[in-house]
Image (cartoon, rainbow, N blue to C red; front, side, top):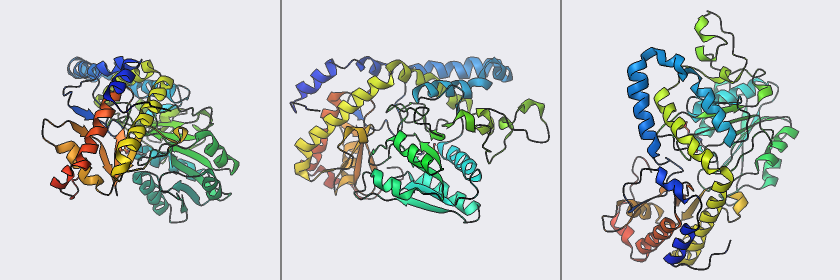
Length: 427
Ligand SMILES: *Cc1c(COP(=O)(O)O)cnc(C)c1O
């Protein structure tokens, strides 16, 4: 993509042509001088969520009390799953909203490994989110240390080649477990191709869609994916710690056995049988009572993405990440910045990492500079990545322009020198 000018007028022109611009008004944006580029960690609050939650608490919980479960609340996890399914190319009975992403990964990875008892290799990669790797390490420990975790290497720390993927997966591989869009660099796999390599070797394929859902088009059925998990508090704007989702392909739902036999995974939870009979559908992968208030917030927000349409969101995201990289090349590369994300659009999700030796202090200066300076909220990922999240539902070109201008000033005038290098608890 070619951009012809670094002027702010050009950024305004791009905003004026943006057909998704109306969606920004759907969000609570109280401070026009705060540029939020962290929607990939915690999405903004949709205005409609406020009334929806007030009603869920006052009218539904408050007045209906226990009867609320029979007013449709019991079906919410699967109904919401059906809506998410429409966004990721799954059938409506292949996804359920439940638990945290990490817990879902545990459940599905365990189920897959137990279905391949003769194989003792798990393949993942060095770009994966640590929680996913910890879960796999914990599973190996739990199963008596008989498995080996093989991590696909990355030559540049940013991306992974298909040759390295192919070399890592073999006839001993039980499970390939990867994150579709890498949390640090935003590197994006070719889902269909990697899934095919796993299947050729007879392994299960489990994708983590945390940085994909609501950000890039995903077609689980088309790629014939076996298993997937994903997060709802990032691009789906479900609120802090909102419950995650899991996907099990229809034909596998009754073949696989989840490791936690909770009452809501039972065929008929309210029969209160003393022996467990698993449900014969996606509910088999549920555990206990759903966190309904958090789930309601997800319910309020997902329709925004469905209305905006994934193809249009992706087109805007591609254009905005490219525009950001263009400004970085023009303004920041001469100041010592390098790109921490892939340059090829088809290999990039919806955030861009830029790297600088003073990355952490630059981040602090962006977030903490007092007015009248514009505040920019990115996040920081070790050792030197400033991660700039593009959320096409509400990020504007003008914001990208102002944010990069501010980064330039902070480095140019060495403003970061006023901030400490000591890491805060949450970066
Ligand atoms: C954000 C994220 C998670 C979140 O996990 P939780 O258990 O829901 O906190 C998991 N995996 C990846 C790749 C993520 O980016």
